[in-house]
Amino acid sequence: MLLFQLPEDVLYHILSYLDCKTLSRLSQVSKAFCHIVSRDVVWKKIAKELLNTGITRYWTDIYPHILLKDRVKIAQNWYHGVCKRATPLKWKTKLLPWLQLDGDTLFLSQAAEIRAYPLRQDCRRIQRNPIKIYSGHQADVCRFVLTESHLISGGSDGKIMVHGRRSESPMKLFGHNQEVNCIDSKNELIISGSRDQTTQIWTLTSNCRRAVIPLYDRVWSVAINPALRLECVCSLGSGFRRGAGVLDMVFETPFHLFTCGYDTFIRLWDLRLSPHKNVMEWEEPHDSALYCMQTDGNHMIASGSSYYGVVRLWDKRRTECLQGEHILGEEDRPKNGTLRDSLFKRHSGQAMLTKTNRNTSLRQTTPKPPKSSPTNAHTMLQFFQLSSDPVSSPVYCLCFSCSHLYAALATALHSLDFRHNLNITISNGVQDMAVCTQDMAADCCLIIDGFLVLS
Image 1 (cartoon, rainbow, N blue to C red):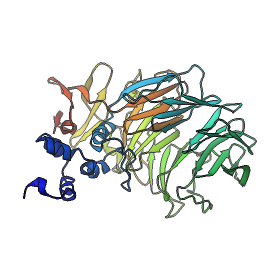
Image 2: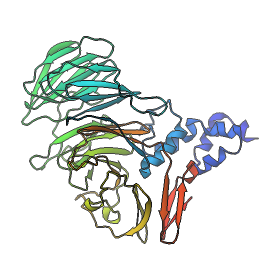
Image 3: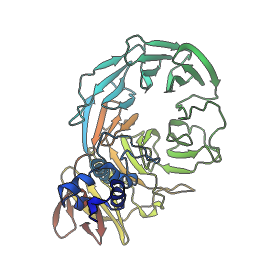
Image 4: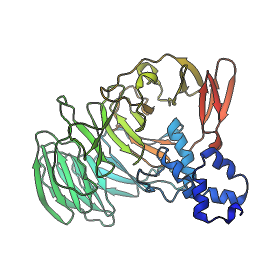
């Protein structure tokens, strides 16, 4: 029996056991094989193990309109930190912006307005003229959330504005007597948190509050469980020092909650287990507060720090001790905001690949062991310093798609484009060698005794 005479589901199941390199070579055999290998079902198993491919832990596809083969290639750049930087928007006044990405539209809060910027289909660049402006606040917008039918925002004037995305008449909700720091919405439910030490529950069908939950401190972040559970069952964690507040939280599943904040940790909580101890944690190596984060629903976490506009990428599976990895310290930070590429580990020492504006060199380093958590030690994947200004700016908000990451700082919106191929120069002390990965077969790099080997 010929290979093409097999039933399609059997053939796809066989091909799903091949790796990227073998599939790439197989697609060059003939047009028929190229067509078969390009099917998403062939790449789904590989994509599940990579970063930000759109395949979640429950095998849901977030980006079904993009070929999975292309997303696997882009995932290699996410892992190795290969990207092109840009600053599509700038403003003169320092703000506390917030971002939301909805398909081909980027929503950005600037002072008392929220502007919707379309993304160009071909290059995903942001058009400078917004297609719509949402207003109504008398002071700065602190945070907003998008649903399929509404845009809901909370401002420092204490008001909540409910904008219909297809209508022009907003609804105002009054209840807080100080600024609304955070807000979330699912279905027709709205949760708001304020500096007035209360959390309030609303619905889209009424301008009257359903409930007021008094708390003992300012509320910086709220999140609605995807299962829409409203009961308050417990308080997470214990023994935190005063001031270790949570600034952002994300539900990845109805049982898995990620938090980050002033105590420099990203924590993963399993709500089915003990509420007094998190199941995993990642520590920011430079002791900076973490203002925001987002996950890909599978293996990757992106976080924004409070100093120098630093964005970090983490792999949740990396649980080996930090003693063997070199984390870029204060002295290694680029003076002009250039990208620092990934760290490659080998058995006989450390080889660090550092990219600057002019060239890239491979040099032997003796890393200092950074601090690790008392229970688990985790490894940071990448870090990107977005701001080149001498005055430090936090990353107030970030969001990403399968190919781009957008981060909002005090005076600019930055973007990282991960669709570009690796094009660097390697120096091993003997000769310079130009390396360019043009296909997936050359995306796997190993460091062996000071030499870069492409396999």
